[in-house]
Length: 342
Image (tube, rainbow, N blue to C red; front, side, top):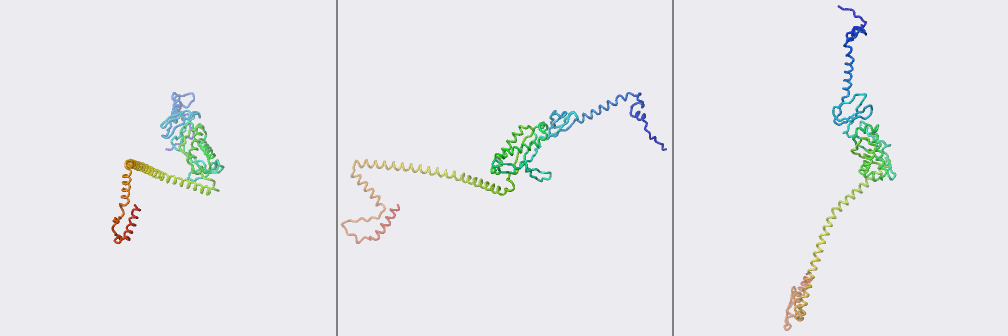
């Protein structure tokens, strides 16, 4: 049953099986004329199919044609002329990216200081260590790819220039206690630099992480900072106290002013009434001086003796032994005290 297998390969039979004729180079059939074009078509179809690519919902695609910018494609299914004619680079334009200045954070979360970036000089020739975080996103994918070889490194350099410039015109005390002002000025300076560089980056936020003096004098400066913060707290408390007391004092002043105005009006009215009574009495006196004088005397005596115990005697009758002068004197003194208190 077993037959010996010829170890030699018959090329003529092999070409016949593949459809290239009977193995003779001169004798070729019509099928041989179609195989190569079909192979080329299949290769072209596969090559064109490699130009299909997907752009994510948060991305833009930047298409290069022979290395030069060609187009920006939007999220979804897109097609380009396959390589090596064109290539595509996808850029996430919505992700908030992070750059660190003055320190670095590794994959495990450990922080390492970078003193070459962090140590800066203030306007009063004091050394300060500053660390800053810059948050940004890509606003222009074309500029992000073509304007700089390493745009993130350009951003870090521009951030360092901006922070050093602001620190260079800020006193140390202000740098330690007024971080918000330093952050705002640094942000404005950095935006102006990035506008000039045009690297397609939009800054969303910058945040100073550390603004401290060098380690050798850090404790002393922290004492100064705490004293300044305490001073600020006391000033704020004083302002709050003044804000509470001043309206009360102003209200009291208004009450006193109204009381003084009312007293002034009463005094004027009393003086006017007294003047009118005096003028009326003067008129009566001019008409009949004797009667008017007697009437004034009697009215005055009536008012004087109205609250005094009185003993009326007849000069012709001897009544002295009948009077208790001691009791009368005591009553007189009591009446005098009452009259004086009134």
